[in-house]
Image (cartoon, rainbow, N blue to C red; front, side, top):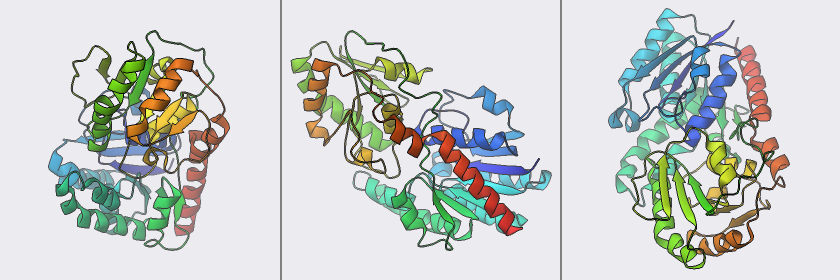
Length: 369
């Protein structure tokens, strides 16, 4: 069986962030087809570990997490990957995110192994965007730009999450080496074919990793600008913020359960799902999950970037206008809808996306030998 080394600056076997969800789908696909060794930075939390996936890996090396290692670079990650390449006959590398892509380029030069680069954002542009609220992010931009460019220039193939991101990478990569992989969800887990579980009182749901500043800011804006206006019309409504990293909120109509083990159940019980995202790039995977589950979605234009326009069962408005469609939805209780399923599953479902990725990787490896 061919062998690969998978590199990531986060734990792809655990966590519930959009990046972790997408990476886990990719890794599960690869582990079924290749002897797969994984080297990653340890996550900040271990919630949602996929024990079945872990059993299918040839090896997994976790490098201790540090803020400097995550944001600036981790020599420990490079050393651990080097050790795997010395000990095992690895055929190629797969790198998630820009710094892992940079390490894969360096390792490729040192050990003579080709690599693939998987991106979730154009990271240097994302940092420029985030620098409006966090000016220190500007200092990261030159390094991110360098690693992304080198990864795209030298990878056998680069997989971008959206066509907009692919357009940036094609300026750096050799012709024909950049593909779009808009993978976002597992169709066997997230789908609209279930019994309604209407909750009383009605739930307005937000799902995300609140360790990320953009997600946390969106939650705080919902709490400050949207919740009071909704409660004027629906005083029993509950705003539920699912995911790690948000501090407890003392309010009788707010729930902050943190990580949950059954995310589809949260969507099934929600009257409305909100996505108050105003910065960042790529595709917002939690938005895709809500659409796949058929829940009524209130989202910002930024949250809908990279997703087909004109979808039903949605309201796309700025955060300051969220209250109106939420109030209306709580009054009429729209329930689930399968109207968007065909489009969402075709464009973002695991089956079609991973099949295309696998074929492209096989072609690239064959062409390089």
